[in-house]
Image (cartoon, rainbow, N blue to C red; front, side, top):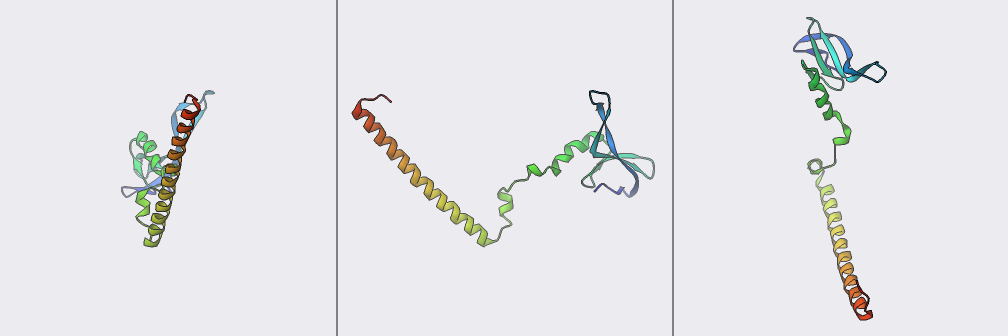
Amino acid sequence: MTATEVDGIAVVADEPRKAPFRDKAGNTIYQPQTRVLTLANGTIVYGCLHCSYTSTNPNSVRPHLARHNSRRKTNGPDNSLNLPLAELMARLDKLAAVTEDRDAWKSRALNAERRLKQLRTALGVPE
């Protein structure tokens, strides 16, 4: 959704921006996510294809596009604040079980390493 008006002035034309460079064959390259918006008063501004962000500087739109990158979104701690209490308690129980299991395996591994060292010492095998 590109802006339909900028500062109260209607957008009369919306086109993809031509890149300031060309491909190897010399053909024009378009930046379809950066829009060239012509306003009713003849002013040209640059906008985002995904939202109503606009700027008079064409180079400011490209960094803005990172906000629309779905790969950046994670299921971090800020999203868990919106979960119901029951879901948070279930996650806490799962974490406690995983931690307990990890501690048990760590204890077994340390014990196995100690016994292996004793066997190697008894057999005279270098480590």
